[in-house]
Length: 155
Image 1: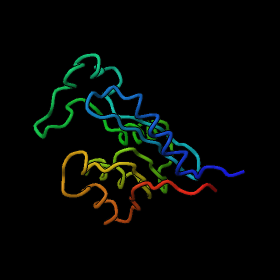
Image 2 (image 1 turned 90 degrees about the vertical axis):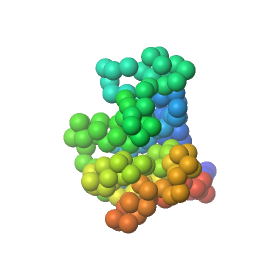
Image 3 (image 1 turned 30 degrees about the horizontal axis):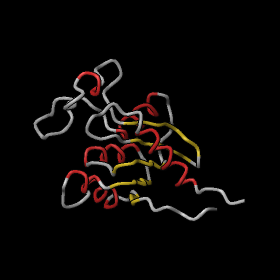
Image 4 (image 1 turned 90 degrees about the horizontal axis):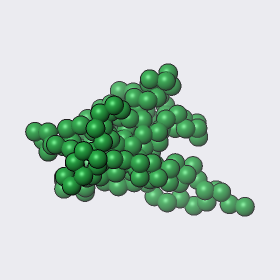
């Protein structure tokens, strides 16, 4: 019997987690793993105890900051990393699966936390209309293997 590759399993989970997001603009999910085990999960949305964008501002989403980004939401990567750290997980050498490639601020957080591999489904640059995926470029420049997910053969 053929079994799905772990990349497929974790990317499918990240995609399903994105459905939990309260963001009106984009739904993003993340799964943080180590040695084929899940360390943490996350999806984009406001910090616990604040406002859910789809409930507070259902038509427009949360107010924008000076750069046009969400003023309230944490990114999926941030939520997964923060929850893992809060619970004492060791992130050194871990892998992050995320449905949208990391923005530059998230890339810096990923690098600083010791994550060694990032697998993303869709391009943040394409989503934002940017020339390149700055976060991916940053990660690859500094030794983190960041690449787009490609459906793999069954193993």
